Length: 183
Image 1 (cartoon, rainbow, N blue to C red):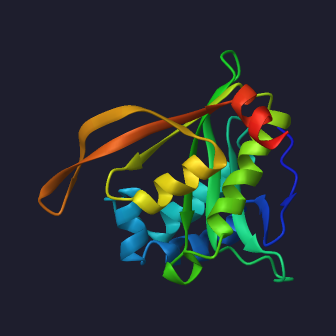
Image 2: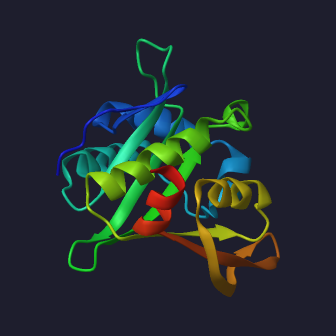
């Protein structure tokens, strides 16, 4: 799979490498990020490093580091991913995570989402991209709707978080919807 750098106005997406393990591991310290992504597991640095190495070589997924365009070192500030790529049905799942609150609300996530979805439709020839977002994350829901995702349904009580079940909203975007909205 061809994984070129994807360049926006504020961010550059580049394929994740083993060298991103330290920054990815640091992101696991962000309690709000862990909550928003529903990450309950704990990971060792060695596990994160092995994961980064594995995904950097994978042909069935596109894992990108989000970096700031003005940063010549292209330092990891988050990740954006198309995974569970199904070539026969031309579909994939999407996820995104920023490294901490200092990167929220600045448009980085919106632009990274736009870049990877465009790549999925134009370069990977996908027809459908889907995601799940927890019901307690309306900010992310608004971003996804702004990009063009549509709500499909709710998976009830899928996450047990701090003594309460949370539901996940299933959203998707189809290639013709993307084309109509973004040309």
